[in-house]
Image (cartoon, rainbow, N blue to C red; front, side):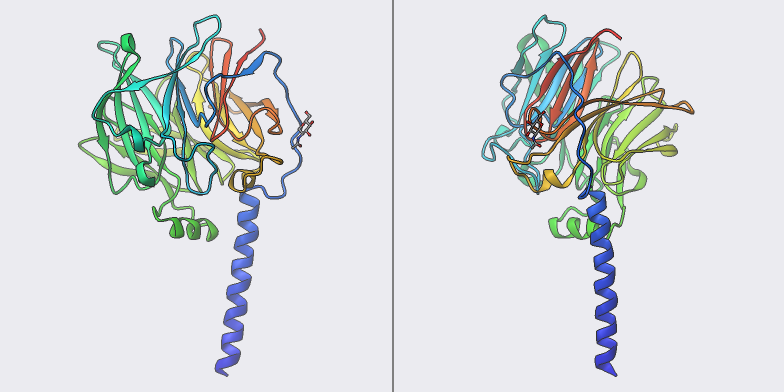
Length: 359
Ligand SMILES: *[C@@H]1O[C@H](CO)[C@@H](O)[C@H](O)[C@H]1NC(C)=O
């Protein structure tokens, strides 16, 4: 009798695990169809960016900040022993170049491992602040810098850690020292993180942080990834990478978020960028997520850029702006625009600069 029960229990457990593994296979698009290329005519790879441009943010007047050199569990890196960097690009120039920003003394640049970034402009004096998700020794911190434009320097102001910020992926600045951050996993440990994904727990969340108050403001994501704010600052857009979706959330006076709607896609969406003029939402996407996890230079991860217009309306317009099988650009994680200039960054590969044609 005991043996029979054991056999039945093992069978049930195996069936459950098999179902979860098939589900995870779907989430990472294991059997996704071949990507049809969509080319853009006036593009080139940006000189000097060779180890990723995982996230990019552009100030409304055309200065682009680029985080490069991410080392992330499960992902490849072309320079695993090199610290990460922040690059600056002035998109007002005729032929913009990427310049590495110096970081003020006192900050541990050797363990710098930048991930999601967000800019914030002080309305009183125009000072630019850069919030950077950092993973020194694979931990999660948020670094706050002041940008000193005359010297191309990032002055480090403070490091933020919190128990509610165990696996931060991306961040959107709300004030001089407040932000929303996504945790792409609930558990910080590697094993529990994998188990969480295999069991499809969807406990990934969004945290509001300020020095006075830190709290969870939304949960239920498979893997909350990119986060961005609408031009009127009333709505927050969140990409759920493994959920293949963008969540439109309304922001309330107490900073809590309530879901307005969910847009479904068939790929894994990474970082989001909101065009400050038009309000369009741009996303860097991974058509086949598993190719990021099992990197092969012969069959590299693809790149795809999506633009969503009128996202708050009844009928948002979704356009696939760029799609490449990895022969040019591998593993696109972000797409940002300024005027008619488009920057596309990647998790660990290069970055693309494009001049878009007049509509
Ligand atoms: C990608 O597409 C190009 C043609 O655009 C082709 O030559 C190349 O073999 C393709 N690479 C892969 C890995 O499919």
